[in-house]
Amino acid sequence: MNGTNVTITPSRVAGTARAPPSKSYTHRAILAAGYADKTTVQDALWSADTQATARAVDLFGGSVERQDGTLEIDGFGGRPGVPADVIDCDNSGTTMRLVTAAAALADGTSVLTGDESLRSRPQGPLLEAVADLGGEAASTRGNGQAPLVVTGPLSGGEVSIPGDVSSQYITALLMAGAVTEEGLAIELETALKSAPYVDITLEVLEAFGVEARKTDTGFAVEGGQTYDATGGEYAVPGDFSSISYPLAAGAIAGDDGVRIEGAHPSAQGDTAIVDIVDRMGATVDWDRAGGTIDVRTGALEGVEVSVEDTPDLLPTIATLGAVADGETHITNAEHVRYKETDRVSAMAEELGKLGVETTEEQDSLTVHGDESVLEGATVEGRGDHRIIMALALAGLVAEGETTIRGADHVDVSFPGFFDMLAELGASINRA
Ligand SMILES: O=C(O)C1=C[C@@H](OP(=O)(O)O)[C@@H](O)[C@H](O)C1
Ligand SMILES: C=C(OP(=O)(O)O)C(=O)O
Image (tube, rainbow, N blue to C red; front, side, top):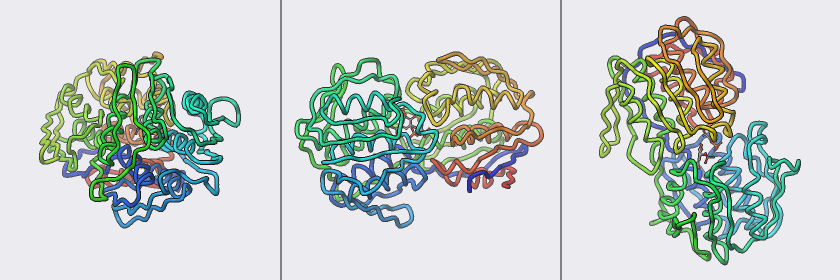
């Protein structure tokens, strides 16, 4: 399907959208179930990225069977076996980081690779951590990027790692550390960015009966633990990074209101998007107990937002800022440059094609908003799901036609994204 272009013309949106299940929780649940005996994972996200983690569990000797939204997972017997093939993590950073640490538990060598985007993302600090703990971990090109060759087993110990590149290194080490002999003490060399993602990890570990904790200087997990979900079942909550798109669509173009279902509170930092659209001037009502959010458009105004904890919201906030009046200043954004693309530059350049002015600095993006200047154009999805979805939002209000090239990449986290937008009333043409 690579290469599908989508054309959007100005549309108002209304109706009900359902949040897809959380990608972050699903990755962790699949791998935790791999460490466990048998687990039923309900409401799992089945997207290109989560399928990459399922493939890794298969290659470690487990099995993942899917029936609709439910995954029946047989574990790989406590510790991963040596894979019979290269592990292809495709486009998924989470898979590559979590699986690198898991591979370091196997009694032999694993090889990990991914697509061009993933092979340009930073893995060096995690490779060094594995090596410091007594495993072997190398980048074949010696540049800290995949392909990676990882040899275990490591037995645990103390390790230090930077906190400002990717929180996924911490998640990876905590999940693997629980089944080492000695356990792990992880010291952070710099303050942790994307911190709520480690909270998600601690929540999933707890649900699988594994104890891990924050310490004064980082995190720690005892070794010799067994993964076992209560009753052999685990249910995945809705995804707030994905919810940001229908929420922003409602804030931008939802005069008659949009309702989002499946929006129960969880550890996701990206729940911050509810407050952000509220602060910008949309009318928002989140019924936490019922798991619904109602949003209606308002006169949007620019805001200042730090994305230190919520990097995946940057593209959505940038589009909201383009439509709002005045400046939207997105700060603490340097780590957003290490994603599927450099999303700070990607949003500045692609919004620029639609007539939007932005100012880019190393760790911030300022969007000079003015809905009246947005004019349709052909923009590049850059193989990045969040850039595609954020540009689709801009297409709802840009005058004329907005064509997004390579739009099928939404299957990484939100396979039904364009169907959802069309059901809300957006005028969408796929070619
Ligand atoms: O652990 C996770 O599930 C994720 C952590 C974040 O990455 P970083 O920790 O690299 O910022 C986030 O951007 C990514 O989409 C998912
Ligand atoms: C950065 C993302 O994911 P990952 O790091 O797993 O590729 C994302 O989903 O926006």
